[in-house]
Image 1 (spheres, helix red, strand yellow):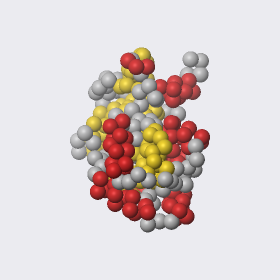
Image 2 (image 1 turned 90 degrees about the vertical axis):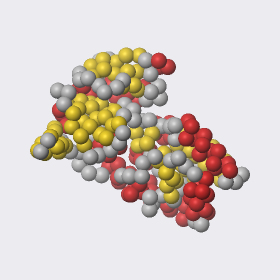
Image 3 (image 1 turned 120 degrees about the vertical axis):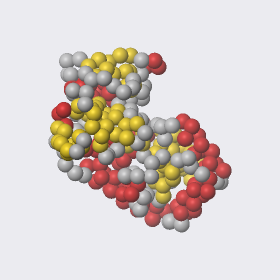
Amino acid sequence: MMRVLIIEDETAAALNLQAILSECGSEWSVQAILESVEESVAWFKEHPMPDLIFMDIHLADGDSFHIFRQVEISAPVIFTTAYDQYALEAFKVNSIDYLLKPIARADMERALKKLQLFSKLERKDYGERLGKMAHREVQRGEMPQTFLVQVRDKIIPLHRDEIAYFYTRDERVVACDLKGRQFQLDKTLEALQSMLPEQEFFRANRQFIVARRAVKEISVWFSSRLTLSLVVELPERLVISKARVPEFKRWLRAIHPSN
């Protein structure tokens, strides 16, 4: 029996993945379905390594590559994502395979056949190489002090300390400064997250990265979630999920030790 771990924060996508996997044979046993970086790290610290990991790149509390920063993963990984971009180009040759959502059974069967071609030693080697590469990728590069943004026919520097939040919608990413001005960027939120100091910026959800200097007010929302008000107007309600609330509070306490 092959032990499988699914890391996916969308319930429907996780159940669909599990259903397709069961259609591909009875030898695949799903050990757990995890929804966040934090939950995944805790699981790996308490359980033996599975035989195979399906890992969504975009999770509620950040991209899944941050898991590799905190635990050593020696199992082969099949990435799942809705976006055929940025990190896939760097990681697809080091993971066993990757699947684009919505996942089709034919694609799943192709990935599993590819996995079965490797011996246990080769599978472990793939996992170890992927882990090392992910760790380097997350740690790579200097954190820029400024971002170059285009304003009409000019390119100007936008200093990191001027930014209130980053926001994405319909594959468009903007930075909003403390004066409420918006500037379009050519980077994904995941790429920006790896370029920003964690003590100054927080990945609130899939749409927002917020700067600590911009947080004005915090309110309790339905189902133990939080909503944030910033010093500038927001394009939509900024909600922090129940799963992310503990991490946000730790981040906030580090900023305001007296609270």
